[in-house]
Image (cartoon, rainbow, N blue to C red; front, side):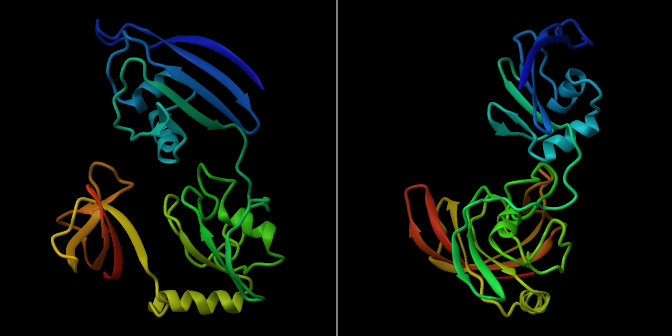
Length: 263
């Protein structure tokens, strides 16, 4: 690993914007890491604009893609492109320096196998693990682990990066995932998911307490206008109805089971 520290002056558009930001660069296998400390004199501006000026050969559009892929953190936390930098913010940017692999590769990652036979495997995916490779997450995924664990997986649904994957869970959601070992099983499972004939149950911890221990929430859901990665109640959204049951209440939180959701 090689490392160096450079200073780059951000061009000021007014008298309040003068400052040098400290940029530390580290070359790592397949990627380059930039650690930037925002100094006291730096004006408050959007992080995508700030980084486009700090990093060579980087446009705001490219920086925004890095942010969307969770390649940019501020003080250890992911941010949106609209985040405005503050003095003493510590910004980390991970930039890939080599092309991503054209297919998922086997990785020796421990799996919590709940059930397995010659046709399928059921795994309890932990929170924090991505289901299959994608932008910003080319390794360390469930698909990489399955390739190492299983002798064969189905070839339906882009086997280069999603071998055996019939459905998915979000990165920060834990729970059971079914993977198919052959194409016939994959097609059968996919049909059952499409027809909603597979029973699925979701538990969630939510803020506050619900008005009734069991009920139905109906609302129009769509992309949040303030954060495109999230869904929210919006006027132009798609109708959704969720039946819930409160399992346990805490001081500020509630453990809720989702019974059924209809779109």
